[in-house]
Length: 463
Image 1 (cartoon, rainbow, N blue to C red):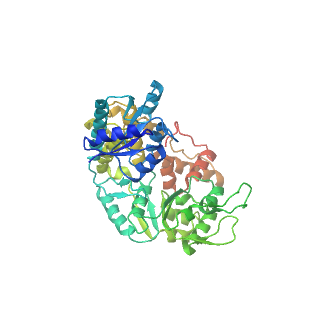
Image 2: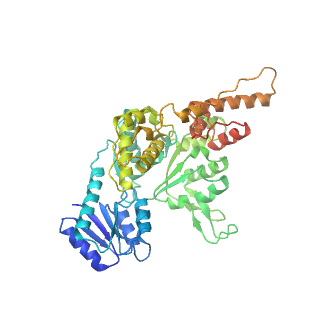
Image 3: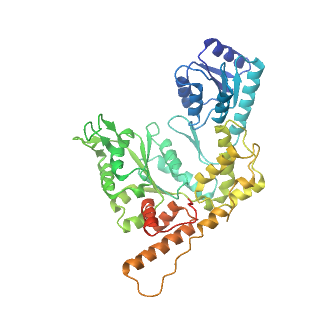
């Protein structure tokens, strides 16, 4: 039986819509305000939602906007007695399935709900090869893939999840490291605890300690209250440390102590705080090279590297690309409350032939962009980047520099060698700086500094 949420502050309207839907064997759940509606949609699945524009507290448009952040967005039918063209356009831009003005004919609401449920059904009937699991909010998470390498990863996830061991997930940017970390957490004994993710390269060195452990009241100017850090928030659950290879040396020492002793102190604190946290780390760097170069602590490396999962880049599992493409087409349709677009054979051939240096993340972004901006019925080949196209040619325009004749100082020779190594790495990765940094065994930050210091420029700014 389909389930529809009715959100309207007028009791008579809620009851009328409920009776109309229940007469057609649709389970209708009434709700009087936006906050409660969002809580219900986060807690249980709905096939559609009839949402009034004018609500107490947050508006219907704000509810619509927030539903886009749900793991499984709910198709929304907006209704209002005070509709304007601008409001209708904004609602449709935010992804509303339809916009209906009160008073409306019963036949209109029945027809609209039927079409909405049909579109949702088309998406839900698509079957995927990979495993599913539920996150802490009860939302279904899907891992897509049937390549032999990836099926081996599914087996490893099941085995590792049952333990409490530290895990190191390795692979290029965009290969799905956080998704695999969530799968480990949600299939293990800590699944009812929190899952806290931290990107170690996204924060300045000076803020990382505060983000991890936070501070006591009065620890510094502006510290008016006690603030809990990520490790405290993850107590009883899992903390996911993304881009662990970019963590500064001073922070590595403090992290090692937490992993060994399971205790830490807030900034400005005087007592130790004990936590029970599972650590899952991820990196796209060559940590062994970083250890050899003294950029990453060997003892921390061994502490994190109890169990290791290597995620292959998308170009090494091309057999999964069609299924991933169809998955993202279906997800884009659900997110935008529309039918999934057709992917013709020539479009799919172009999708499979492209390198996807940004891996799964780049593929998903390209599919969603084509869904939003392209033909309303299908994804045309022209909407997919071509192998060997402009971006790849421009990336390859940075040629290695020949060493000049004559004697060079040691500093000049070192700079020339570094420049040539960086340019070669950028050519090999088609301008993907994160992947180039991984090949070179340096952090993203170090690579960007070298690009500036050595005056290395590409003809365009490519990822």
